[in-house]
Structure formats: structure tokens, C-alpha cells
Figure 1 (cartoon, one colour):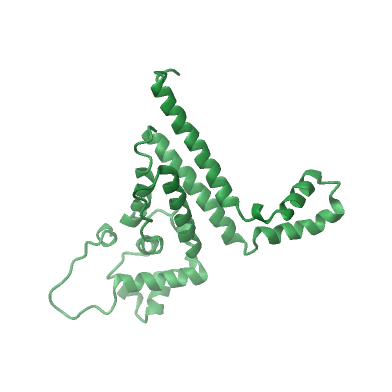
Figure 2: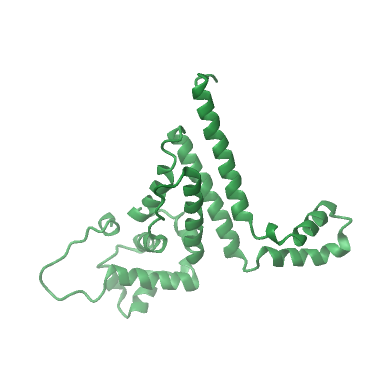
Length: 237
């Protein structure tokens, strides 16, 4: 299965050209997942979508776990080119690109949490983020933790977008109607909503706001680590 994910495929020189390909199978499965969710994807459903028997798919894939691995690879695609970017600008671009990928295919939020073989695209996303941090003075464990925090921010916002089609301004309007009658019971909430509704610039910015605060904290850590090294205090607990 790893050979399929990594583009190592045995090609016979004899016999008719196969009517199915792994790409066709993946595209059909992604179409089903986009329309109906990951639970709708099965070997039986995909084979029927393509007009083949389920047994025909087993010539290409051992089962659903491997099918999920293939469609995650294809749906996420390759990460953006972050060369020549500073670590902060690069991580910002990386996080926005990953969020966009999950929003295009919301089922990937569930799929990436499932046990499955890992392919080059998924590892390339990790490589792209971690490469920006290699020369920052952070330890390997810290770099992995930062990666986890950033992906967590992406997934939380993507999950929120998946759970509701209402934007933040619609939500504020809905609770604003209630607060007109019950502002005295929720004074802090009433004041916050009133201020937010007066400033459109402050709405629908949860992802960027959270991302920038993460990057602010990371910048303080990196700069503080550098100051400690320069003053000879790097080993002081």
C-alpha cells in the first residue's frame, strides 16, 4: 500500500490497459465524501459509482483504510511554496493554506484522525512548517509542539465552519435580539456584542486573531531564547 501512496507502481508490459486507475477511484471517492461525508465512502459505493464490481477495486486497494489514505493525499495536495519567507510569514501562509484545504474537503478533518498509511503530501505539509523553525533555536520537541498548536487552531476553526453555515455576524444578530430583553442579566455579553456590532472589522476574524496571538507568543519565545544565549543565561533554569 505504501508503494501506491509513494508513486511506486508495478507496470506490466503485456495485456490490455486496465480500465480503472487509482486516480479514478480516488476522484470518485472524493466526490462521494464531498457530497455525503466520509461515512458514505465504501468500496461497494465507490465501485458502483464507477460502474464496476467491488472485487474490481480490490485489485488496486486492500480496503477502506487504504482508500481513505489515498483520498486524503489527493484532497490535501501539496503544501504552498514557503521558500524565502520568514518563519512568521511562512507559518501564517501555511496555516491559511491548510485551512483552505480542509474547508474545500471538510471530511478530511475526520479522515486525518483515522489510522491509515501516511503519504508524501501529508508529510510534506509537516516538512514545510517545521523547515521554517529549524534555525530558530527551538528544540525538536518545541517545534513539534508548535506544529500541533497550529494544526489545532486550523482544525477548530474548520470544525466550526463545518458545523454551521452561519457566519459570526448572523450569530451576533440572533443573540442581539435576545439581549435587547435580557441585557441586565448578561451585562458583559451585552456590552461586548454592542461593541462588536458597531465595528465590522472585528467580526469573522477568529482564525486570524487566534493565529496571530499564537505567532506573537512564538516570537516572544524565540526572541527570549536568543537574548538568553547572547547574555550567557541559556543554561540557567
